[in-house]
Image (cartoon, rainbow, N blue to C red; front, side, top):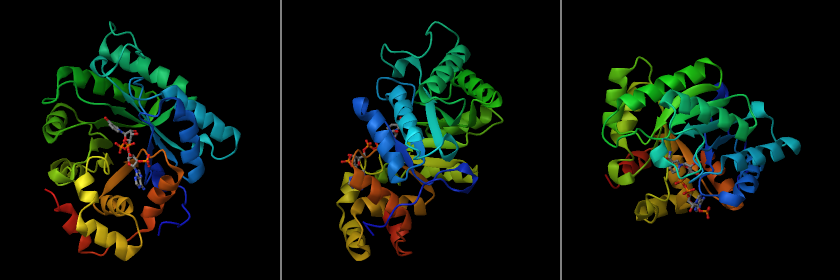
Length: 284
Ligand SMILES: NC(=O)c1ccc[n+]([C@@H]2O[C@H](COP(=O)([O-])OP(=O)(O)OC[C@H]3O[C@@H](n4cnc5c(N)ncnc54)[C@H](OP(=O)(O)O)[C@@H]3O)[C@@H](O)[C@H]2O)c1
């Protein structure tokens, strides 16, 4: 399993089956973005939030891959995010005194510039303004994101770091549901069971991040170790395969070429039927 040659990650309909995340890579962002594309990733996640992402570096990595004929823009699924002032440091992609709708417009324009494209495939609200409620500010931003979509700057729109309450309040306030919810996925919360269920009911694609880093206890659990040994896979591969089995579109942010290969190869790993519900209820 570990050495299966990866195939590209773009699926029919333009929705990827694995997303390469570019957070926290700083000066290595161009090199690692290009490497991920060379290894077979076709979906890239970033954000116009210099504090945690180097979006212009992602653009440099893309440009290098285009020059080397590894991929073309048409092969790719590019996702970026709008981040509120409170989630940023001083390196802002918009005028903080402008209205929120204008900040969305400016942030998008800067993202397109960084990524060297005229549109992204997915534009995500990095997180609602309040940890508890969907606010009027979120509504203003969500409507501005729809305007960006209608203007051709993104194909799809989504939200991140959203609780079930956020999503319920959002759906009461708007006619349009997000195409994606991108959340940190804790095994102790049943792998975000409540939000995943909401997503399933409303045909929203659930993107899960920190599948490995947030669930170290699961990675070392005998159930996972046993499955890994029986399938000649690594515990990380078992977790990614499990995630896909319960409808999660996984992200990985690995900086290691072998791990990139292994993460992609996990798409070919089929877990025994009973293993999936057992892992789902392992910790919550
Ligand atoms: N929306 C948000 O607020 C938000 C927040 C956090 C992250 N994200 C997105 O999600 C992406 C991924 O973040 P993440 O938190 O899931 O991951 P991450 O922080 O990038 O870390 C992944 C970890 O798993 C390890 N790993 C990956 N594949 C492995 C394998 N096959 N075997 C062993 N170890 C492996 C990596 O180590 P090696 O590097 O050594 O492989 C790394 O320590 C980010 O880059 C970002 O795009 C979004």
